[in-house]
Image 1 (spheres, rainbow, N blue to C red):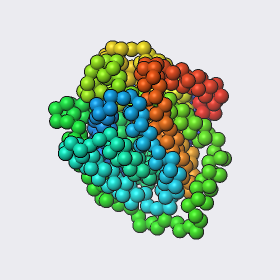
Image 2 (tube, helix red, strand yellow):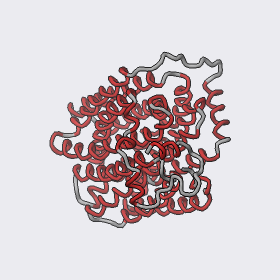
Image 3 (cartoon, rainbow, N blue to C red):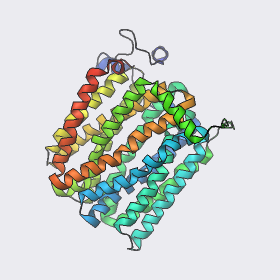
Image 4 (tube, one colour):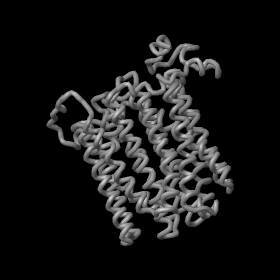
Length: 434
């Protein structure tokens, strides 16, 4: 195993037979739990992992409960899109400069501040719900503030991983981040559905608020060298423009960002329709909505663990392209299904495809990018994800309002399929990345 590891710590195109898993037996021989969880040997990453998985569990409970709560209040698929749009507007306003902040200031301090703000917002929503004063416009405003905190949180969080592990474990750490995110996505929505049905949405919001304490506490426990950030006389605008100039020289990263933007706009917005799908197509309730989210999370966890275990032995570019091509195919099948069991199976596959795209896109970008520009590049990368998700939510919610949810999913899937085939044909350099 040591020889295999040493031969695989590079992103150069391998020679024939190196790093290419030929069959299932070869794959099994390379599996190791030590490799799967290699990043956990780092003290700071262990703290990050345990704190984040608790916090993310609460976040998924709130996201699932809030979406269904909004649908109960308004009975409008379009309003689901409005909430997603309100969450994303701050991304357009602030995330570019948030990337500059992630390069200028200590990322841990940024994360402590943003996570604390998110905690307070969760408690405010819980209080409004328990006192029966909550209205749809309250949720839109709170969602906007949550999006603002997330705009500064995302670039710092993406770049922070590089400070927690050694370089040879960076891809593994990114894969484990996805594993914990989607493990929470698999469990949180199901628990949210049950909690919502038994105790009401207020308790889902309260649990989310409490869960932030875990990540804040663990961030404060981390140990770093007290290295001061480099002082610069440049303005934030100048720093941001320097980041854009650097990015223009990175053609592969730009291609990856195009992929992330397209799959976010056309693919991830599928989750926006889950409450309407649960009620209108499957004739279910809050529990059904939670189980749909859980199914997607299960597929994502399976794929994340695969990448964490075998990232050093697979052609990451080929797996990314495979996920990109398969996602719209699964979406088409989902749009044609009205069976709960079939929808769940397809969503497991959709979850795996999405994580194959996003996890490997993130990992390849973080491997290529210069440390000097890491925060700014990841800020722009996060912009592609968070800025286009609400636009996609507004787009798909509006189509669903006028033509029905299945038609909205089918239209997005056809457009995404055409895009994915064009990427497969025109990106041989991406397919060669190991």
